[in-house]
Length: 141
Image (cartoon, rainbow, N blue to C red; front, side, top):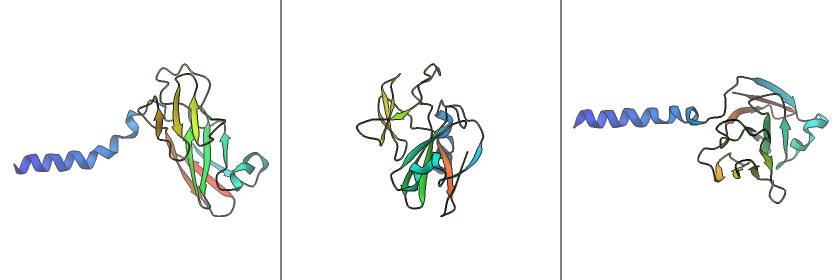
């Protein structure tokens, strides 16, 4: 009985380590710093703003400002696109910008936290964000 209990504790402890391995979106290493005061990232100046950052991740990034000092960044490659055939990356819905659409697979995801909303089992690949509190946002994986 002790062994079974110990095995269960061990499995539960390591179960969180394998979350991102199930995500079919390729994991490309990158480390980028953007200045949110530049015109191309001006939409991030206010809470609720979002923008694209091209050239990083699998199909570019989408960055959303959740609060004064909190940002989230997701890969625009939909995890519903298992074969990688869809070349239309995720984009915000015209009626609700907090919903990202994958028109190739009819999937939707939350821009707020990357979770799947419809027609998807896996959430978006999320990247680490570090904000200096002034103008510099660092995004990396």
